[in-house]
Amino acid sequence: MGTAFLLPFFKGKTLESEFGFVNYYHSQPMNRALHTCAIPLLIFGILTMTYSIDYRLSILFSIAYCSIVFLFDSKTALAYILLFGALFCSMIISSSQNHPSIFSGFVIFLSGLILQGLGHYIFQQSAPAFRSFEAIFTTPVFLMMYLITDHKSPFWKNVQNETNKWKQMLNNEEKKY
Image (tube, rainbow, N blue to C red; front, side, top):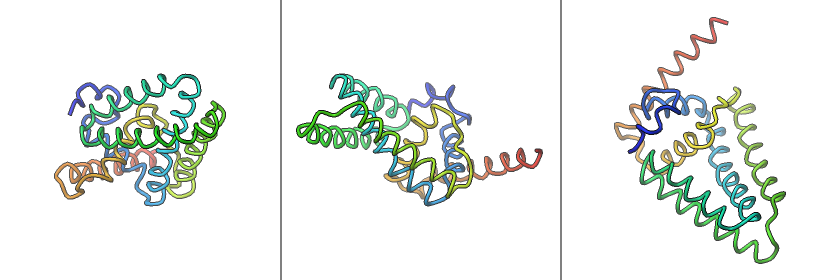
């Protein structure tokens, strides 16, 4: 993993700690499910918007995104390459009927954001952390890794320990106010 390059963007000091923070903010199962559904919508929306400008822009976005995900984990990057490929193919098929527009891409993207907001405010009953890098990369990588890996591994046990530390620390901060 190339997480050393990513550490300046983390709230925690390690990937396990960062994922512990993300896990704490996405611990409610319905919130996690809505985020898992929303991420492909967000990606599809961005691909649609960039494709409507120039197809090479969507290819560049895909390569850049998956390259950064590769710094987290190579298997997760492969999963995202497959996801981007499937979404890109479906966009090309749908664009053969009509040309995708920036507006339709924005509506799809906005739908994904609304799903995530519903997850946080209705089910998690807390506001999102509102950290850009976390929203764009860390949470989607966390959710994909969670879907495709064994949760009994030492890595995920460390993530759970870090989640408990974040929970305790953040609950203590809330009690101060």
